[in-house]
Length: 455
Ligand SMILES: [Zn+2]
Image: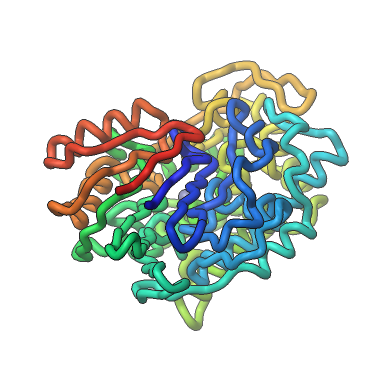
């Protein structure tokens, strides 16, 4: 008998964590952090299962909502291996240290942006992160790999971000084999920088776990969002303002840099406008991308007017000048260096803020994109005069067309059930309807902490 228990990303987007019990072993697929004020308190709840009895973890990709609670699992007694692709391992190391440092500094200072509470402050510390990183074990894409007798896996390109995988797990079960496909986060069929998922790959799993974040929705064209971004920047610079781009450190920052570089080369953007990357983390991630995507020149997303901010005093310095583009994390303005830029820049009508990614409920980014005119950062109340824009074409998640293209590869008589996860319930329901249209009728939206048996 195979049992699956849903400890995250069930009727919500973050906190991915599926516990799988087979006759041979107990393992977890992803161990992510819950994000946003409504669910983040769950990060501090003790695990419902005995972490020391978990044999191994399969990690789909580095994003913190998939990897961010691995050190908590370590702290609770887990000592097995964490299998992931080598690029996922490189990025996960950076993100876990970064997360531990943020938690430590928030805990010490008591400073929180937005509505984040002190409760989440110390799920783990840097030394837990360091010990966890030692458990990471690289696996190759597209190669079947026996983890232990009776359990084989295959990591397949998922697009989305560098290293991201969908994971196919084949489990011996009472003399028969059962195959489960975990989608992880699915990228778009066409995406910049990294390859998308393999459209021609075929397999016939018995069960599929698919993300449904954008179920029922289609993204606007990326090219339109790029054009719009360049227009907003040009208008902002011509009136003497700063264009702030809150951007996620992994994938989004690198994509935006590439689009800016392309625009400069095409003559659409003045090559003399300074572009500041005010994120030491994003710089480190960019180096991993550069090494993975090419072997010699670091030319994919580097250009003459790009400058790097390392020291905090430098970051303070550029808050006093105008006529520049500033990229900084976090992408949802719920912490990171962008907060200082917003604190000094939001009340000036010449400035603009361009959001380029998903904005979770409860974040400052969400308040701004919802049109709030008064916001509070730390203890400072700010009247919003800057031009706030939200461009939807940059998502690294697929939309409904991408999901359908992805799942069609796995449609067969054998397919018993599709579990819709990693989405608000209404999005999962919308994707469910789309699946019906292509003849996949057996789907299910699991709840947090629900347990199901796979036959
Ligand atoms: Zn992701």
